[in-house]
Amino acid sequence: MYMMGGFGQKLHDTFIEGDRWTYLTNGLKITLIVTFFASLLGIVLGFLLAIIRSTHDKTGKLRILDALARVYLTVIRGTPVLVQLMIIYFVIFASFNVSKIFVAVMAFGLNSAAYVAEIVRSGIMSIDNGQFEAGASLGLSYPKTMLFIILPQAFRNILPALANEFIVLLKETSVAGNIALNDLTKGGDIIRSATYEAFLPLFAVALIYLAMVMILSRLVTLLERRLAKSDRGN
Image 1 (cartoon, helix red, strand yellow):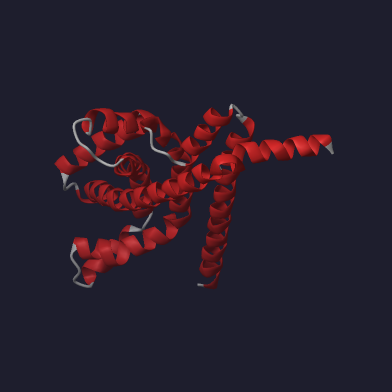
Image 2 (cartoon, one colour):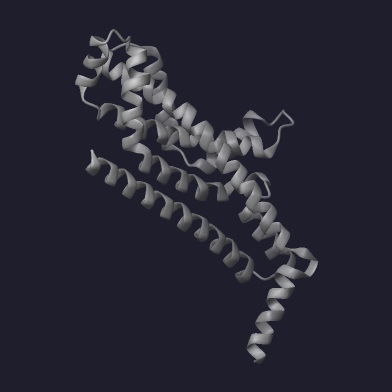
C-alpha cells in the first residue's frame, strides 16, 4: 500500500502538478501535425522523383533531371535526418524568422521523399512493359499512360510499403526537439527537467509512440490483407 501510495504521489508530482501533462498533449499535437504535412510533402516530391527516374530508365529521356534526382537521393539517404534538420534550421533558415514547425515539415518531408521515391520507382519498374505498349495502342502519350495506367497499378502494389514509411517518419520526428520544437519527445524532456524524474515522463512518451505505431501497424496489416483478398478475388 505504501509503495502504491508513493507511486501515486510520483504520478501526481510528475503529471498533475502544474498541469504538466499538457506538455505531452500539446507535444503530441505538434508531432502529428509535422508527421502529416511531412508525409504529404514526401508523397508529392517522392512521386515526382520516381517518375523522373523511371522515365529515364525506360526511355533514356530527362537525363539532367535524372542526374539531379540521383544526387538528391544519394545525399538525403546517405546523411542522418538529424543533421539534415539542423542544417535546414541553423544554416538555410538561419537568417529568416520562420516557424519551427515549418522547418521540421520541410526537413522530414524532404528526407521522406527520398525513400518514397525509391519505393514508388520500384513499383513503376515492376509493371510489365506491355502496359506501356497497351497505352500507346490506345493512342495515349507517355505521360498519360504513366498517369492513367501505370501509376494506379504501381500505387496499389506499393501501398503497404508507403504506409510503413510513414510509420518510420512518425518515429523519426522524435528528434525535432533538437531545434527547440516542443514536440512529444521534447514535452517529456521538459517534464523531466522540471521534476528531476526521468522514468515516468520518458516512459509515457515511449508508450504514446508505441500506441501510435501499433495502431498504424494494425491498419497496415488490415490493408495488406484486404489487398491480398482483392487479388485472390480477381
